Image (cartoon, rainbow, N blue to C red):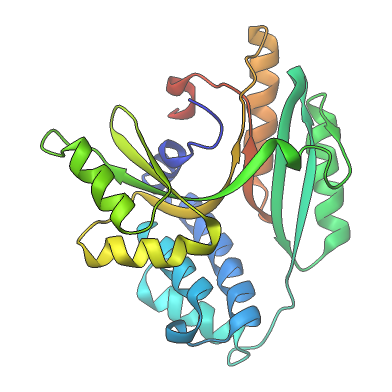
Length: 248
């Protein structure tokens, strides 16, 4: 599967230890902080906050945690000043990587990201060095069951304003213009759909096949190390990774 299809990873993470779930909740809490700072603490008037809350719920984040994150972000429980920084670079084999971070210490984060790339023979580039190889898209993933009609799902998605839909073995990936993501998600939710994941992603225009097992191992270790960093929110890449490895 291509690098942007992350819902397998998300599903696996949901079932891991409390520590792993706590790490996911921490990252979502930072997204809430950014959303509140940019659009206020009222979800009704802040579509980005509504999107993050939907993401939190799809990751089984308790409502109390969500409420506390919003209160903290709005200054009711103290305040931490976060900023978003995006890094771009190459993993071994010419794999393009985009790393989205939310941090309260840009020097620490830059050092950590640089260390990850260096450790596994990658190179950190300048802004724009790989971003042109990706398209920003809203991606909504719906579980595919035996009684789900593909044509009907496609019509439902298009009627809600989606641009396209891709059918996988066990899921449907619905693509939207990033600016229409909130509206499409809410329209589909009103129609009764629930999502395995729902977020704006950087979707690679083309994928890169890795030449050998050694390169594959290095790429996966680099991606895992980046994902495991507390400041890293998302890692997008264009490597062709075996599906079974993504689900490990």
